[in-house]
Amino acid sequence: MVTFVEGPVRVSVPATSANLGPGFDSLGLALDLRDHLEGEVVAEGLVVEVTGAGSGAVPLDETHLVVRSMRAAFDLLGGQPAGLRLSCTNVVPHARGLGSSSAAIVGGVFLARSLVAGGALLLDDEALFRLAADLEGHPDNVAPAMRGGFVISGHQGDAFYAVDSSVDPRVSAVVFIAPTPVSTEVARGLLPAQVPHAEAAADAGRTALLVAALAGRPEHLWLATRDYLHQDYRRPAMPDSLELVDRLRADGVAAVISGAGPTVLAFSDGVASSGTEELLGRAPQGWQVLALAIDSDGVRLA
Ligand SMILES: Nc1ncnc2c1ncn2[C@@H]1O[C@H](COP(=O)(O)OP(=O)(O)O)[C@@H](O)[C@H]1O
Ligand SMILES: N[C@@H](CCOP(=O)(O)O)C(=O)O
Image (cartoon, helix red, strand yellow):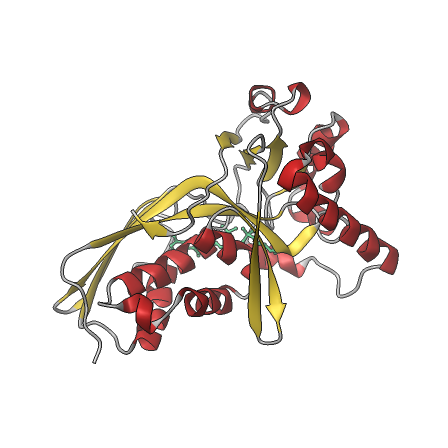
């Protein structure tokens, strides 16, 4: 019989940028931009409040992504609470390629576990990661949202792996958030079933280089962030984003489509052409630009 904790529990969960150019469906980086969730077990019913990103757009019932994720975790933890109150304060923009859905899923499963007495003994971090990755369908955002930092992840049969890798302290990110959304589902629908072998080989080389560049050789970030597997195929859904990537890269900036887009992420490595101040001035009109440090905590009690 599962026992729930009394009173509200607060958690926070970071935005994430997946792919980082060539690391399609395998690389992900947690960024210092957090959604906050507060949950409480109550006598009956379901009350969901949302402020910030998604307010007025996301449902406020059982179909809300955080609620669905909490329900899935409660099932694995041993049972559903009699009633639930959930309050979401969101800053991660939705459908922009900054991992809002993974933040909702990871925040939800972690919040559910935190609402159960001894929850971490009933559902350990590995099981929680697996649940979240199953709910999302790909682990590249979920892994850094859960663990923080830079994580290499993928499928292993019907399970998942995730391995932390280091990030040089000189590296940070500037994100250019496009004014209009593109859903990940739509952006994935643009990808071909097959790619030429030479391009797959080139992409593998750049991905390996990117891991080394992030770990301590940031001077190679521009070379390392060239993608061959997804960005150009997605151009029709986000032409302005690809144009911005092209412009920044032509000036030597390590710029990529963040996740499935349409946000553009540029790595700042502290040197003049890719310094944060210089990058902040490159935002197209109507776009939001944010300088973000790498988040090293992942989901946590707020
Ligand atoms: N915090 C949230 N609460 C409820 N639903 C969310 C939340 N974040 C994301 N979603 C759902 O996920 C969708 C965005 O997911 P997706 O297309 O994968 O984009 P993203 O790149 O932001 O993850 C939203 O339109 C919404 O339906
Ligand atoms: N590897 C996925 C990443 C999707 O990230 P999101 O932040 O856009 O949800 C993809 O490229 O489809």
